[in-house]
Amino acid sequence: MDGNGRWASKRGLPRTVGHSEGVKKAKEIILFIKELGIPVVSLYTFSKENWKRSEEEVSFLMGLIVKHFKEEFEFYIKNKIKIVHLGDKSGINKAVLDSINNVERETADFDSLTVYLAFNYSGKYDIIQAVNRVVDDGVKNIDEEIFSKYLLTANIKDPDLIMRTSGEFRISNYFLWQAAYSEFSVIDKLWPDIQKEDIVDALENFCNRERRYGGTKKT
Ligand code: IPE
Ligand code: MG
Image 1 (spheres, protein in one colour):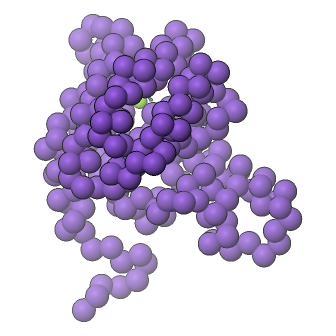
Image 2: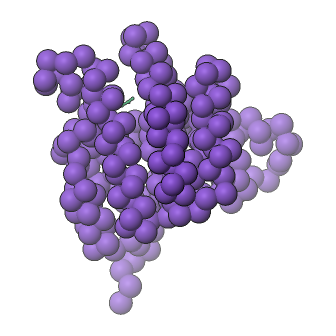
């Protein structure tokens, strides 16, 4: 969900206003994805590298997540949307962690749509935490299947489609291992400007792709 800062700057507003708009947009798109019958979506909301931003912006983002889960708690309950955190919980401050833990706990039994909230997540971090746990467990003959079980995404299928907004052709340390055969869609709009039609276009385009996974065309 890229482009919140630029969306605000273009309007002469502080970057934080862009983040507030971005969260509103995330809610709208989550609901749309549920209506489409898609069972799983992940949202890259805060990376390990995002701590490098100004203290003001980081603390605004931390406050925003608490505010969102407080104000929109009923939205998740009413729509039976399950929230699952992905990332390093140890690096998150208590108020934010309490908020995430609370929504995870209260939505744990829902199954209409699962939203993986990648927050304090990064692909390299995920791989390194997996390696450390493999070493701790003394596993010797590691293979791809075993290794995948140590990733934070152990219980999730690799993403079919990764959409990025703001026209940037970068993975920005997202699902590095998991994206091995993901399809990509780069949408040339800032995240707060995204419309449902953009999601539909990306999905239609995805449906017309031939996924060969390194094999050859099926005849
Ligand atoms: C995405 O928007 C939100 C987060 C990473 C928290 P950005 O904040 O990256 O917006 P730009 O890229 O600066 O416009
Ligand atoms: Mg950005």
